[in-house]
Image 1 (cartoon, rainbow, N blue to C red):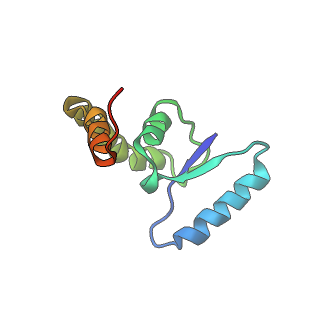
Image 2: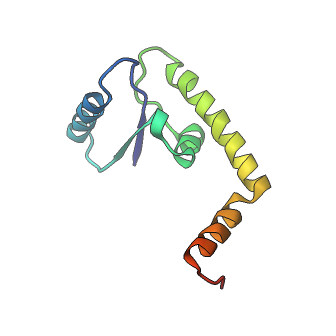
Length: 103
């Protein structure tokens, strides 16, 4: 399970993440990956938007307010990546770099 969290501004990020991970490890009976919203890769952000469940927020709607700008950014990136065929272009560049012939 992925746990996506947003931290308050101005807190010590390492200390806050370690503290949250320790609290979750005590409370949850299963393993999890703790991901901070501002570090989350687009697939995690989009999955949280589509299927995520908010388990705590300081005020109602706060997490969605924080998540929405990242969702919009990730959607834009996904659309442009498809239009520009970035996966194929990156693979071709890697093959050239490492002199690997295409299958």
